[in-house]
Length: 382
Ligand SMILES: NC(=O)c1ccc[n+]([C@@H]2O[C@H](COP(=O)([O-])OP(=O)(O)OC[C@H]3O[C@@H](n4cnc5c(N)ncnc54)[C@H](O)[C@@H]3O)[C@@H](O)[C@H]2O)c1
Image (cartoon, rainbow, N blue to C red; front, side, top):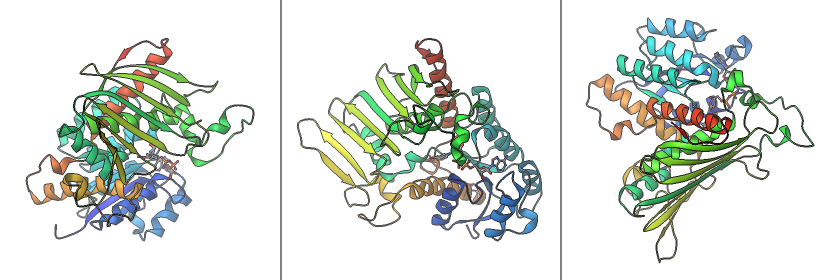
């Protein structure tokens, strides 16, 4: 491409969490520039953010609808929009930009209902637009290596999956020291903003997507036990899943596990070996072949090939983390947009980013888990 891509952002004011991470990740790639935004419903925060990024005044929009409409008719319209607002807004905002013929990268969970998720998926297909959903963790090179090892049969046939995502940031919401937290993230405990689930919707869904990426296995049905501790939404969840091939897995997610910050761990066990990836130590992958001592693969080394090797930003030994993983998804997403603009053919490799279809699976998983738990811990089909 002779020019940089132009992008806009909805959400992500300077005090927000993930919007700034998206901007830094896109900046790592050096192929796109931020030219438009509606960063907050608070006009002061919106303006402050737009001015911080030197946006021209007419492209700091006070409303996302105005932004989609305004951008749609410009000759230098944005090529894509990043949607980094709380869950309740994803459906309407995504729809508005798809209808303006603008490619979308939206945060997870995709939206509130399966019907909405399918509608977005159909709309993107009808309009021939790319629609990414930011399931961060499949962006890590060592997760890509895990996928490759599974595909190459290195651990044999999968027998079992055991994955957890443990945090403790909501521990003060339960027990003797209960207090009302006022931090920005607390909307996650409000069903009007978060949807039908807090814990499963926020982090359980990351387990589902990361496991599906590595193994190709999607849950067919789930048996879930969600813990609410007297709150409106779940704070802890234990879920048994059954995949299409009859194999089972266990997914535990929690926001009340004291001492755990962002503990996503995925373990896949096969007939010939096992793999384990730990998000808080993401540059390594543990692989054990039956009867052999464990091996630790390091990102960026000569013995790591394939997609894992293509997506290195800095040499081995220099840790890469969250911003790099998100940058990798943007590299693929933006690369696909460039190819489309140039009229080049697009391969499966070009589409190695989580899509709206992953978003649909995520919403189905959340609903099945909540339904299973509420109906007395029964098996629920997705
Ligand atoms: N992929 C990941 O690893 C990851 C990590 C964190 C958050 N998330 C997801 O990202 C989304 C945002 O989470 P967060 O923690 O950054 O939230 P946050 O509360 O920190 O930030 C949300 C931002 O959206 C703005 N906003 C809200 N409604 C808006 C609207 N209608 N128009 C414009 N701006 C609006 C707010 O002002 C704020 O700037 C959530 O869906 C969450 O699930 C994903």
